[in-house]
Image (cartoon, rainbow, N blue to C red; front, top):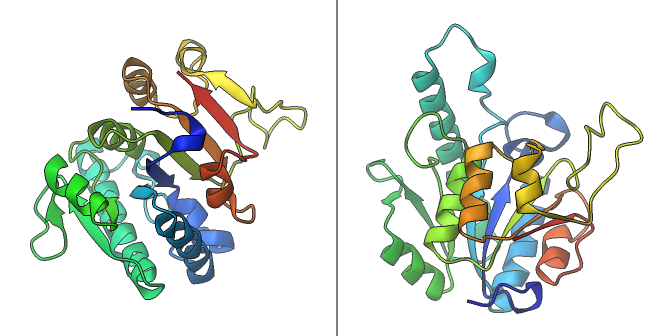
Length: 238
């Protein structure tokens, strides 16, 4: 499959939970989510198939709590992503898109149990497909869920929309002189452990030659521009 940026037919969009919370930092900011929905609708209407993974950071940062068992903390995080996907899916529907939500575990009437065949069929039918619940196991972040689903559905690229607008050589919040990369090879991300995503996910990306663009969600039309190859973010090459 051709993965050059100008011929993207199927993308996996990763949305950070914090970015969806806007200035509130927690919960949902509906204008922010509606703006995302309008951009995604334009992309879908142009014929691009869109899968989505959403982080859970607007509800839960389990690793900050030493009181709770790591497995239980991660399970709470998985459920936070399910809540996020149900909410965002409804906002998407309100602007005229069809959606489907898949989880790697049973959620009764809330979601569909993930299968590649069903997910690809939904994408081919023009529906936006949400992959909630991570990979269904503790000790793996939504980064891993993002890369795994992107590889499984044979996406052309991962688009990662974040509060920070790319990959820097040091933390831009701490270091004013931090330098942003326009492009960086995935091997360098792995070798230098740049913290762009967790290491296991970065290695999976590298092994499966899955390119990624990291960009700022808050810039106007940032998702549309990134699909068109006009991102101000960082392209992680393979």
